[in-house]
Image (cartoon, rainbow, N blue to C red; front, top):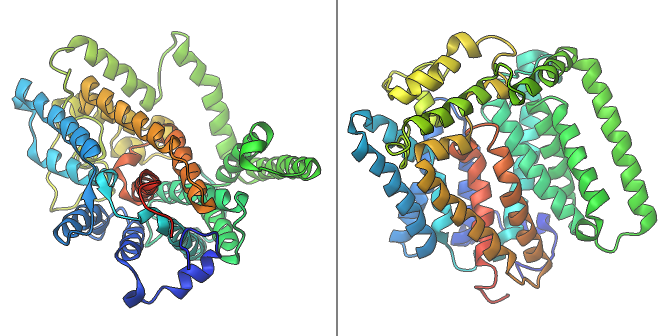
Length: 462
């Protein structure tokens, strides 16, 4: 059987689920994907954060993988720059923040990993994604109904214990399921229409709706319509003009229907969106900025102007707005664990903490994305400094061009290349909303796909 051949994913996945028959690559993919679904609260979350470091160390000892010198050296150099900042302002060094931040960012280590012929197991990975999407959809529906007594939310804030694997964060669940929905949609557009992929796509999209109200579906349909309207030759090669018109018409009808349901069931959210639309432009026309995310950005740039030399290397890992910095503020989690200290740098205490504490996020509609004074791009820029951020940008862009230059021949590998490039393009926009880079529940899948795509052309087809 040719693993790269466009066979039915359901046959591939279910025929090879006996652990004794799985290869090292298949076992690695299965273990990492299962662990990425662990919750973001409680002691069990450590398994998700430790999954990648343990995998890399163990696989290196077993000589099953090797590391990309270029990516590894680039990431180590950025880490060095982050520590260099403490030489300039040593009084700010909080070791607990540094160690927790390294742990939360640890999944990026997958970019360094090279497993021989890993790309040949991309169909197997899609089978895992589809299967997990179906299971999570069922679990999410049960948990949502048990928690709220309904399958529809009445507020923008769905809460951290509403839906998802083992009662995880609902927004995280929505983002993860939406990414999986896009990947499975790409598979459908490339001609892979097995029952498993179709049901997995329905489950992923439905789960995303449960996690982030009806607006998730509207976002998905809007993105799909843009692709169908402007890039049909890329996404739907060989499609007839009549079928293209039908898809466009059905997409518009579905989008209008979803928006109508949103207005009917989510009246409070409509009012909330109207307030944002009315007040947000003031932030860009010299008016008063009241949204936490924009206030934090504004104060970050002010801080760089005041301390350009001392912050050239950044505030240091876990010392500004990263998830580690927020957790150790003591008022980020609903219940701060006894085993974690309360440790804040002066930067977090003076800029971030006043914008995000229990008195703020416990109030409905004040805990929305726009009020959250943190997001991954801001965190990278401030904690790693402009120099570290520049190195990361160069590395990120180089990954895109390296994958784009690949010339895959198998349909499955073309789908892999397209999926990886799409995620690389989309990811920066996702990172503007939250500290998603520090959630291995999201990043493990993304880094796996990019690593797989890096392998294209390095293995002979089988």
